[in-house]
Every structure is written in structure tokens, then in C-alpha cells.
Image: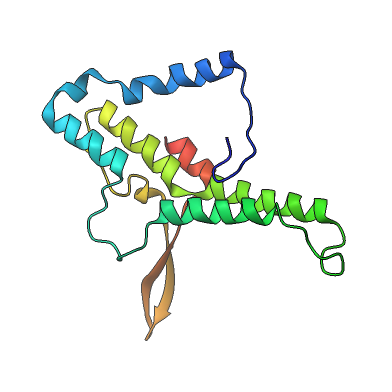
Amino acid sequence: MLIGSEESIELEPSRMRHFADILNPLFVNEQCKVFETLFQFVCTLVRAAGMTDTGWDSYTESTEFLKDLANLRTLDYPDEKFPDPLNTHARLALISYCHITEMNFPYDLIANLLRLHLGLKYHTNPLRSLAEPIYRKVNGVRKIVDFRQPSPSKKIKKI
């Protein structure tokens, strides 16, 4: 099912079983019987992040944004501003798709579950090493001013 949408994409039961068989070992793990590993597992599932801005959660904001886009697709658009509503719906669906593929949450979740499976600890930003520094000269000195976040394909390759 698309997040925040009334539409659903039906998978054949055999295809769902295929994906469940692949991901199941990440969620059902004998190591989770050990308290420390169980704690790390819970941190992964609740997305423990330490200090963050009050009232801002990127996953919640992403799901709300996707709900907004889904709701926009249900509106009747004025013909003078939107002469082809089917194209407008398709564009909104494309924005939803792009947002879902760029979200950090799914990649971070799988990366952390894999870390736990390998005996490593939960990390608030498990794919941080993939970010590329952006340099600028500040007062004649070359400094890192920001980071370019990795593409989904880089994240998938690392995972």
C-alpha cells in the first residue's frame, strides 16, 4: 500500500512471501534474546535519535507530506488552472514516488537491522559515511560547509 494513500498495490502472495523470507531474519533474530541486543533492536525500531528539534520528526513529516499529496490527487481542479487533471494526478504521484525513494527511514532501518545481525550496535545515522563533503573557501580557507547526501543507489549498494 502506498503510504498515506487509499490506493494499494496488490502483490501476489508468493511475491510477498519472497520478500518476507528475505527480511524476516532481520526482525526475528536469536541474538535479540540477549538484553543488550534487544535494547539495540528497540532503538532501531523507535528510531532513537538523541537530541533533536522539538516537534520535528522527519519520518512523521514524510508520511504527512505523502498523505497531503494523496489528498491533493482527490481534489477537483479548476479547468482554467489545470486543463489536464490526469497529468496533474500523475505528477503528484511521481512526486510521492520520488519522496519515498529518497526518504532516509527505510534505508536507515534496514542498515541498522543488518548492523544488529552482524553483531554491531544501533547507529543514529548508519549511512553517514556515504555523505560527500561540500567545500567552500571561507576567508581564504577551504572548509566543509555542508554534506551532499548519498543517492538511493549508493545507499542500496552499501546495504
